[in-house]
Image (tube, helix red, strand yellow):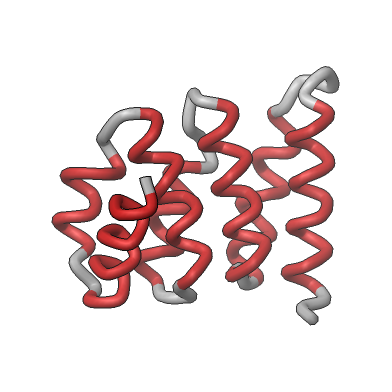
Length: 111
């Protein structure tokens, strides 16, 4: 798992977005989860675009990782995406809702 994460981070560092999209953004749950976490290491448009896609992932763990990564690297556009997602979540998704609030707070008031 660490090897795969390191490979994804290297691809992100090199800006190989076509390869990332083809192999990981459309990959297995585990690959998308690794991608969501790895995107926290980059504030590039490519990483942001991947995260926006992963915010709508059907897998809760992938979605939560994307929310956390957006919070770590986000900008004002990220806040709008997080608010959009927040409006569409059912109230029983408390962990996801809490993560969105934390991410929005971090984007608005970075440390």
